[in-house]
Length: 153
Image (cartoon, rainbow, N blue to C red; front, side):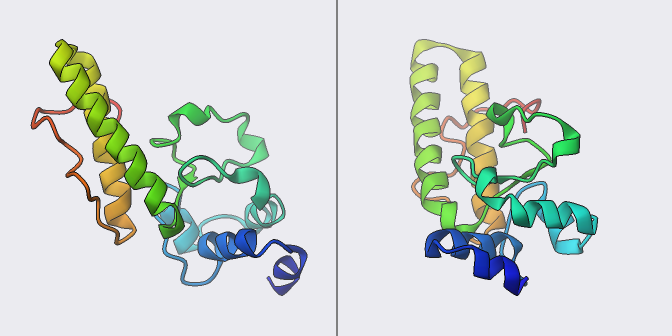
């Protein structure tokens, strides 16, 4: 592990690396349990360590391995290989705020399916923030009060 740290010269990238792959890292997302439990094979962990710079997404990291084929990153909030850290909490909150505004707009226009879709995304973002031990302010993840679509949770 020390050799990997020595090869990462950018302090921000090093801190992000430690936040995801370091001992005791606080992480959330479907891939978090696999990382925490040590269920990933050593060769997978080695690949992630050496390719960490290539894994960044808007709100976290994609830990998809090359053998798994190309990633459809537009689906990353529900992807089993997605992981995020408290460092992304401001971005997660900003995205949550956008989704809440989109729910309100869709509701005003009578677009029920869009209300469901954006509500489901807002709920997922709120869940990620909660898993990270962060607050979901400014909203609660379900601004419309409607029942959200469960097919995208």
